[in-house]
Length: 516
Ligand code: DQQ
Image (cartoon, rainbow, N blue to C red):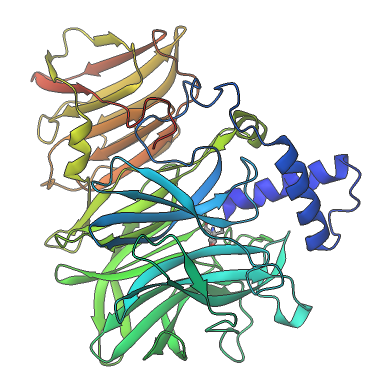
């Protein structure tokens, strides 16, 4: 929870400024006061500030206002896609986690539904309903998620330098086929981490079914040993037996109060089979790692053989599910990269990345491509032949675009820039000679040839840009110095060949930027 930590520090300063005493005071007191403050001051868009905010995405899913983070419990049920997500309904900063809910028939157009899970006062999730998953048992959609509560020191599992909370794994069952009402079990289904372990965290359960029962990974870690996924087994989702660690990393050597920063805590594990491989994803050190490898279904041991970064930009805590046609679809949280004071004042924060289809290449490399449904957003295509002789320039009258450049084998370098008031505010350069992709200050190697999708696909939606390179690499950027009619797209090439740009203006998914 890299971003979360910064936000908590800011809340601490806020409460100090309000005269709420030392930041080390009892969590429940300052939490309650913060909620009251936030409820009184949260910008709910009475003056159309959200609808008229040019930085607010128009075709990505996000709540109608306030804060969202991780996708939770994605599931296809009775003909509809349901997506839940971490939501603070009271303010555009992290805190007081609930599960927001949206439904769709195509993963592109959404309807917001009432909050699915809220903290139960006095219950094991009284301080928040953290991330989790949805599965179906005996025809009943079921959530398994992490609840957090205040607890005596010996029961605390979450120590991130700010909060001290007890995490337990909780279960809730759907009471209706629209998945609007959920019935929580009052007691945790896993109340403690494995005996003898002093964990750095204990959260974000991801269950799956095997021929002999249910299995589940829980994100965790140990100081000095590294982040890990704890593996459990059950026959009924209610009684769980700890087996062993499914996977384990190493600390990165940094001394950090937050174990996520030192690689000593893995958040949001996701484990599933894909083609001939098994995949394990986890979030730590501010990024998401993918691994592919072998799973021995008798011994329940996973050996990772390849790994990489799932997205090199503002993308965290993803969660996948199976679409009815068998595609493995990934959702992820697009974070803000501007200061909290700015997104808090804007009244919204975070968005859900576009649905991404996951596949695995012959050598076990992960492949990531936007789902075909996203093409529904396209307006009429415009094509242009680009060459090294002159840059391509286009003043952007809207900020909703898809670009495709077939650059797999053309040999030269290509650079895309956004220019506002004479300054470059974002740049993506693909340089085959230097074997490098650069996006602002981030760089990473070009995927090795042949690329499963020889091209660059880029989706701009107000302050969000999602770029997919060669079907193998992705980077999500945030660009805040951008404005319709004032920002120009410039594309420059080197090399002898010309390439054909396809450019689609994209439609918004609602008339008022409220994405419903
Ligand atoms: N976000 C949730 C946690 C998870 C973290 C809390 C990752 O369950 O570990 O909002 O962003």
